[in-house]
Image 1 (cartoon, helix red, strand yellow):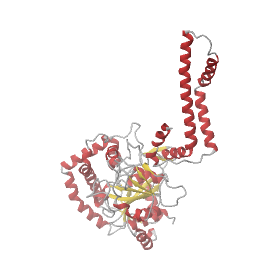
Image 2 (cartoon, rainbow, N blue to C red):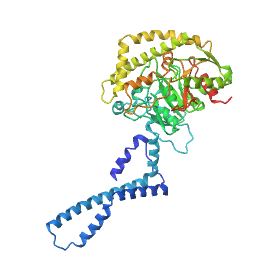
Image 3 (spheres, rainbow, N blue to C red):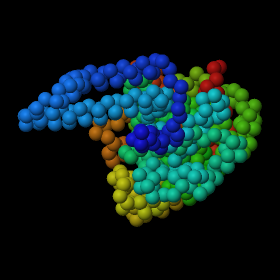
Length: 505
């Protein structure tokens, strides 16, 4: 029984708790069938029983040395048989008592690795289910930031992160802490310690979940939560939203407090935002981060109820899959937005901002987390990011990139005097599959260079990633992602535009 307790205790970190369930006759039948298969695999059990009976009936006969050795061998077999029977009995009772819980556990594991810790809500509950990325403090829980080192050395958080204040005030249940790339610094979504969240399409094709908010995106996609909170430093909400075909909102820098969030670029790029399957749930998520947001959204929807009232600047970038550009153009035209093509001069400034944003993100990661660079248990790829950041910082690239930021912000400010939003693909290509040998530095750089997100972080503007159908034949993923960039503090207007993409006109 002690072994059974130890075995079930290993499930607790995954599910948060185990429950006794009322098992169906079908589950009992399945259990018995499994045990019958095991018995057939060990046909010697019945033979051992018969031999034991025969030996015991001849106990008064003289025993030769040869017979004694045979008896000893049979005793050893009988002992093994008894142990085997005890194990079978234990398994039977354990499976009978916990079949329902075990089946639920397997179902949770099948949507694999979305959570680092999961507290299943009551099945009858109709409350909003909220998940929190595990680089955001939740009182009483260790904040791992996806790192084996932090998981083993950090104490439980003494208090909630500030961004959870409204959720706590409204008694919104937090159902778990979601997985992420180690220390939130890589882009594919890979996590070698806690497991990589699995992003499947059509039940067959499996591609990267995107990072660093990989678990948040997969938890939303699989329906385990209604809203997940993520963080976005260089695209960490929008990239996984694009990979998983959901909605993700990068908020205006400074709008939502990052106090109690494991830092990467707290003075330049870090933001907290919501992820959801649709705009109504994204509004609910944003309303948990900014008091009064739902009312702001309603006013924005009333002010511009039609796509024909919204002007969008379309940005085309070299290296983009033509099928992605075509899908985005098709949906913009079909919905009836007013579309203007942005100039080559603007494109050049966007590309420079992308380069500068990458430099700032890498250098700030080194500044914030370099103390982990020599720790055992920290992944080699994470250390490589820190090494790159150190190079960028010491080569003075970091300072130069930050000097160019005000000019980029002015460029965007001028653009938004003529249009409401900028439209650009979130990713230049569809999310790839992981190499069969796992991720590498080269693969992570390839994915990082696919994103069109970090230049927005450099400016501090908000941006919405939203799914767009991809009708092109032969594609592994049936959707791509459109990124709408807005002026500072235009989150309500962005979500209204997202609503218009959802609405049939």
